[in-house]
Length: 210
Image (cartoon, one colour):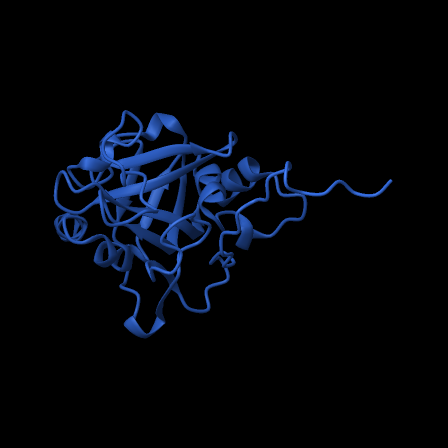
């Protein structure tokens, strides 16, 4: 099975993303079944990709080989994780956006510290997913198909094609309408779609009347 997953990740980002739905991601004594993912191509053709402008120390692992974890810190407070895919040196990746906690739920609850207990929210969104799994910058460059601290493996059964939906990506400043977000239809852990809206500069915003 791991060889099949390796073959999947060696292919195009959109195909890899679709195939990752239903897979099991394990870290920190918690396992999440992936219900939503988002594909990103490499240099040149995808303005939403972190590798769009070329290799940097931050995105170096994206250039392959496939099967490794690309973690990054965002908004000064959250970790997110991508699965590197595609041919080596093409810098494609799949963001793991949401999932269902299927093992280690008490640990995930303790990490998330939800004010209102709702297990659907434990890994609903890329930052929440990493928080539930205890994934941070230490996972950067981890090989996911081996026996390391973060592992990815096929689910118990494939997701039927008629349950896989695709649509525009979430919260990106470029390539908004590329339909490379994939999710399992009807799953309550899938995150809510929000199109990115640029923030207005405070210099241009009128001051409120006093």
